[in-house]
Length: 125
Image 1: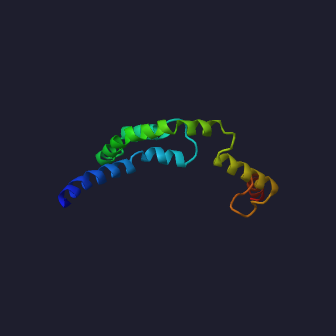
Image 2: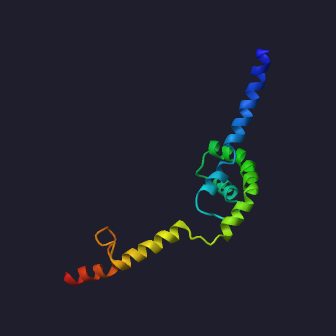
Image 3: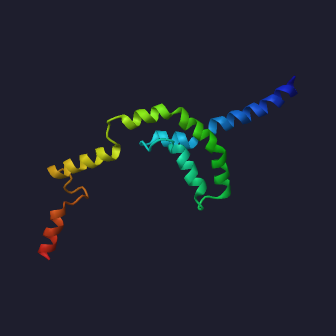
């Protein structure tokens, strides 16, 4: 009985580990800002084609690619929701906020000099 449990436990653990670690690129692509449809799959394909990655990384990506494609397919409705949502991206929010603060003079002395300060410095020299 104990040997049969050991024999069945190893394949179960191996398969569950592979499934738990699969689709990593898709998960990473969906955690960050919106990158479009099948972002994880395209990231995997780009990294496989990149010559800077070693053979070990490429082989892991090749194992991950079908699972990432499957997870990207399952998450297509979520990608559609994210693409049609009218929320601004974090980059747009930050740039708008910095422009507003800069216009109000709130960024004075914070390492963000205004463009006219450079012109005044040149005029003094």
